[in-house]
Structures are given as structure tokens and as C-alpha cells.
Length: 546
Ligand SMILES: Cc1ncc(COP(=O)(O)O)c(C=O)c1O
Image (cartoon, rainbow, N blue to C red):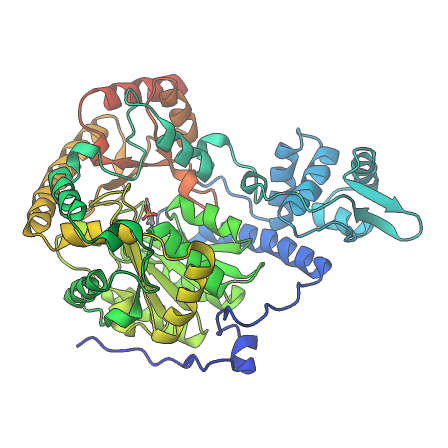
């Protein structure tokens, strides 16, 4: 039996002390805390910039992946340079764009007071006359208004949320949302070595058709009615048995079905986070974590990832310093690196989590690709402070959306309320279809064949990439991803842009990196790399940007 970490937070229902300590998640029936004063939010947003930058400096020092050396070493300087780039290269433009960004991410809301000219000049490391100039131009544009003797205030109404405006404005080639859009929108003529899923011909199409035929004969309710609050009971029972095989003890009552892995994480963010809360992710990590967390207006901090899990010294440091509410990670087959968490690192992660009352979301979406089961945080922890999620988008169907959350019972209670509030009783048809396919022996056989096929594709893609001077950072034990280092001095975003001109969608490293320190890396999906065209295009793109 795996050892269980002791957990201080026993989830007592509505203990104020626990809430203050940040350990009590949102209860749907309890009104949320009053909004934090805008200036506090501003200072939080600023300290976020500073902390991310400080962390970037840390990455340069400690990062075991040895990412780019081109990181800034002083927070304010980095902020200034980033904003300068966004503001058309001038300092006045940089200050204007920094204020616009705070309005877009609602750290500054209509009616709230802007920082004083002097304070903001210090923040941005520019002269006071630059800030005065910027504020005056924003007044002329009607974005802010001046109240003589009092200062500057945000005018207008709350603007609709624009995710692309939140956080540093990234080059489109490495913007998480843009990379996802390109992959989702591309036509049949487009090759997608950068996408995160298998080609349709690799999916269990015959088993799905068989499952659909079964469904067409099902009782009327299955075809027309809402699902139950927790979701289709036979599927939850089957999931409980499958989790047990990986050492995770979860009764069917501790499992709630969701409509996808993304919805599972979205519900968890709604449940645990308030605006401005800090969330820790791996660097690199699955890029949509960044986008989703931005949608929840969370502050994101990151920890460098090593071949055996997060860099544990950096992890302890960042948790102690930033006190994140959540850590979101993949233990088994990490996206994008393909790394697997070691038992030693798993224990140390749980120890730190215990010490700082950190909740961990373990996203296990690639579980069925594993050749041998890796350690799961949820198994060591006994689903105490770890929430385990999964979905069948990668192995069964991304079209019939079905995911799940396994967590302690009182958390499942609150999550069910949130699911009803935001999605009602959705996903019944998909859940029944998923159940039909999973219980059929054909699925296991399909997965065995798929794992063997992926191993062959991994070997072949690795060798073809090496011929181009592109080196895998790690030989993954399983899965579909190869995280690779490009030949010295080459920038992944530039290569991605060149390849896109030839209808090949790549996934440049910085799309996965909060610290933007993976510019020399690229993720390849080996199932989408078969044939010559990907490598011919890559070769040409490498030559063009050399
Ligand atoms: C690590 C990880 N989590 C979650 C998801 C999203 O899964 P779903 O399609 O079930 O929303 C993905 C998709 O690529 C992923 O790679």
C-alpha cells in the first residue's frame, strides 16, 4: 500500500479560519467575498509581474532543461521591455498599454483610481513626464478621465472579457489561444505535428460505431433526458475500478462526470479560486492551462519541469513565496515533455503541499497511453488534497465529450452544484457511449495496438528529427509527444511561422512556457509526423531562418 501523506486541512464545512488560510473552496450557497479594492488588485497584479519576472530570473539560474539564456534579470526591466514592445516601441506607448491591460483584465475597473503619476513612473521605470504624457493621451482617447485635485480615474463601463488582452501580449505564433485555433481550424490539406491529438484513423472508430448502434437501441430516456447530478452510474463504477488499477481509491460517489477534461478544470477553478488567487503550473505545461487560468483571472506562477517531475527545490521555493491556491500538473505522461513523475519527487511534492496547504489538480488525461503505470499523486495522497481528473478525448473521441473528476466527497458535493449551475445535467449521451465502448473488450485491444503503433512512430520521428539536428529532450516511455531542442540559435516561433506558410502547424516551445524561456524548443506529436512532408517543410523552415 502506498503511504498516505498526513493532511492538516480536513475540509471542515465552513470554518472561517480555514477560509482565511485559503483552504476552503467556494461553497455555491455562500455569497462570495466582497470584491477586493481595485488598488489592492492593482498592487497584486503588479506584484504578479514582478514575481513572474523574478521567477524568470530563477529559471535562468536553476532550470534543469537549460532553456534560453535570453531572460531578463530584473522584474521591472522585463515589464518595461515587454510593455514597450506592445506599445509600439515607445515608453509612452508602453505605459498606455500597461494601463489598457489592467483595464482589460479588470485589475482596474470603471471608476477606480489609477496609480499616481509618481508611483507608476517608479513601477514602469520611466520618468514622471512619460507617465503624464501617457495619461493625457488616454484621457484624450476617453479611456480614463482626470479629476482635478484628485487624480485619474478609469472611465466607461466594464469591457467584455478579452482573453488575448490579459497577460503579456505574445507573438501570435506562441499565443496559446492562437496555436489552439490554428490546430482546430486547419483543413484536411494541413499537417498538424503541433496538435495534441491523434489522427481520426488512429481512433477506435469501429468500437464507437458499435457503441452508437447500441445507443440507438437504448431506452428513450438515454436519448432525450438530462443526466443525473453525478453522471451515469455504470460509467462511474467502471472508472472507480480503472482508477483502482492505478492505486487510486475512489468510490463511485467520489467521482463526478464532466463533459471534458477542460470542463473538469474549469469547474475546479470556479470551485477553488477567487479573482487574483495564485495558481502554480509546470514550465513548460499544456498551453491551455494558461488560457483557462487567464479566463479565471488567476495569477499564474510556474516551476521548471525536469524528467522526473517539477524541480523540487524550485517548487518548494515558489510555493513558500507565492502560496498558490492550486498546483495543476500531469503526473503520468506530462504534456508537453512526455516526462513521468518519480515516486521520490511525488512524495516531496506532497510534503510541500501539506506544509503550505496546497491543493493539487492531477490531470491524468493521457493515462491509457501508459505502458506501465507511473506513480499518481492521488494514489499516494488518498484523494485528500489531490483532485484527480481525466477524459477520453485522446483515446476514444474528442467529439463525444466525456471527462471526470475524482475528489473527496465534500468537494464533489460543491462541484455537483457548480456543474448544475453552469451546465445543468449535460453529457448523458456521451457518457453512455463512453461506457459502451470502454466496457467492450475491443477497447483494450485497440489501446494495446495503439501503444505499439505510438512506440514505432516515436522511434521513427525521433530518428528523422535527429537527422535535422532537432534533439529530443527526453526519450518518453509512452504517449504521443516528443519535446525537442532545436539546433543552436534557432527560434521555434520563427520556424512555426515559416511552416505555417506551407500548411504545417507546429507547436513552438514558448506556447507552453509561462516564463517564455522555451524559445529553442518545439513539441512534436509523433502520430501526426508520418510521411515526408513534415520533415521536408521543417528542413526548409530551418534553412530559411538560419
Ligand atoms: C494535459 C491536457 N489536459 C486537458 C486537455 C483537454 O482535454 P479535453 O479534450 O477532454 O477537454 C488536454 C488536451 O490536449 C491536455 O493535453
